[in-house]
Image (cartoon, rainbow, N blue to C red):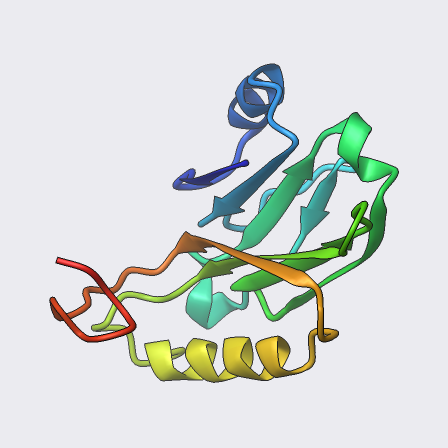
Amino acid sequence: MATWNCGGLTKVKKDMIMDLKYDIVCLTETHAWRDQDPSVLYSVLPSSNDKYSGTAFIISKRLSKYVITSGSIGSRIVYCRIRGIRTNIFVIGVYIPQKSRKNPDQNDIYNQLDSLLLNIKQGDCIILMGDFNSRLARDIDNHVGR
């Protein structure tokens, strides 16, 4: 698994990622670039007021046969549920806007993410990956380390 803020997805960048042979790669800031490759799960197209967003998963052929469901919430959250041996795996890719952004702002995306997390089937293993554009305070018990 890997994640990359690609600063605008292109065919050259996509082909480079495919050559790395990861099972799943979360891409953020894909912008509006699309192709018809079934191994790529794209979010909704970015709106004109958020044109630099866009998220996607590139999923290997080996893993693609285990994808149960996939979807997105707007252009900043993409997800898929993968059938596992002992438990299913729910993978979420997210691109949180920079703190200075007003539309959408970070809280909008965090609220959408929170809503998604609350609706994941109990017992699924959750993997959250992406570009969070955030800074956390240090030494908050049960949240971050040193």
